Every structure is written in structure tokens, then in C-alpha cells.
Image 1: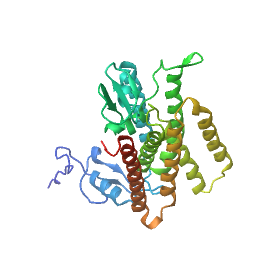
Image 2: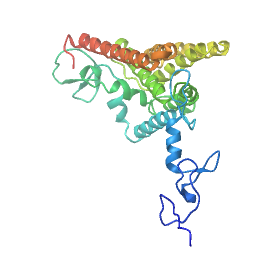
Image 3: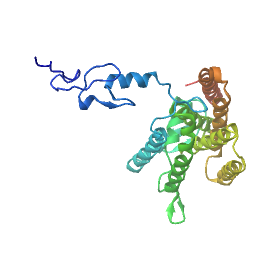
Length: 311
């Protein structure tokens, strides 16, 4: 009497005599997965992965299985793509750069903002409801022909320095926080920098990822202090950022730098010191409160500039 022909449960046309050591179903070579004893089928492997608790960072974020700083790569890519867009269409900076309040004249020039309806002039900026500028400005940089520093245009140095800082700081901070928390930190830092620009210098057009990067620098400092590491080198690192903020105040937006630094420090303090039992809930709530505070500051400043009418 001939033995019955056995086939793979996923590929009935494939004759096989190997079984999954977990569910006892027949599997072909395409469905075999190495196991400690014998082989497992695809479904058993997936089921086993679901039952394994995902590793978490000290601050509650999920540890990426690959270890690749995906968010940092994406942020760098967005900045570079935006810069290429500026090379093709320079007007992108005027349209999406961080501007709190300005007036566009009929001659195409921009003038200092004054409240009220002025014939021949149109309000432009956050004050006129263009809230997207609070974030889009953080992904733009000075055009190549803005000014020169030695033989290299300062606009090129602007994005090179910022991407270098994002590359070095972003990889470390993302690895410690996990992707979701890291992205929240970056965007809130960028927003905090723009909000301080709006509060202090609303008539100034500012661009650059510096505010977000200063936020990452503050987060790097808090992370090392929370983990109890040797702070001497970290203190020198942060002091270098603060000195640069003072030196560059004459030709960069110190408001954006300071706003990003303070916001990043606050966000990271929440992420680092939230109670372990309700860590995620506290972190989300605190970041939400900070976001609401920043939005409220924008609303109040808009009301002040417009004399009570909020766009």
C-alpha cells in the first residue's frame, strides 16, 4: 500500500515530508524558518514575534529593530529637497519662510507691518493666518546668493552646518528616544523657535533648522544628565552651542535659537523624568500642554498686532 502524498499547506503543488515543529503542518522550503529545534512555518513565526515584548528605551520609546535613524534621514532629506526647491524657485523663501507680520505693497516690495487696512498694502505672515510658516520656515535655508563667507556662499554653509548638526545629534537622540518621541521633540523645538521669533521680532523673515537643532542640543544635555553620565564633556558641548548663539546673534536669529533650546529642554525634561508607571500618558499630556501654550502665545501676539482681531 502506497503512502499518501503530503503537500505544503501553503503550496499544495509542492510535495514535502517536513513538518512545522510547532503546529505540525507540512511545509516546503519556501515556508521553512529556522528554529531552535527543527523548522517553523511562516504563521508560527509571526505569532511568536507578536508574543515577544518589544524592547523599550530608558525613556519609553520603542527600540528600532534595525537601529537605523530613519527619522533623522527623513528630516535631512526634507531639508535638502526644500533647498533644491529654493534653487529652482527662489520665491519659496518669501512664500514659506517664517515671517510674523509684514506688508506687501502694490510695487511688490515688503514693508514694516502696521495694523489696520492700508490702501495698496496687504498683510502677510502669521498675523494674516499663515500659521504654516511657523514650521515650514524650519525646513528652509538661506539661498546660495544671500551673502558670502570667504569663497563659499553663506547660504550653502547655512544648510551644511545645520545638516551636520542634525546628523550628529539626531542619530544619538533618536536612538535614545525612539522615533515617535524624537519627532515630537524636533517639531516642538522648531515650533518653539518660531514662536519666540514671532513674539520678539515679528517683522523679520527667518529660515533654517537651527531652532530644532538647538532643541536637540538641549535634549542631548538632559539625556546625559538623566543617565548619570560624566557631564564635563557634555557641559563643554552645550557651552559651545551657547557661545555660538551669542557670536552669531548679529547675523542669525538668536530668537529662533533660544526658543528652540528652551523648548527642547522642556520637552526632554518631560520625556526623561515622567513617572515610569504612567510614562507615556504623562509624556503625551505634557507635550500637548506645551503645544497649546505655544499656540496661545501666537494667538495673543496676533491679537496684539491686529488690535484684537485674530486671523
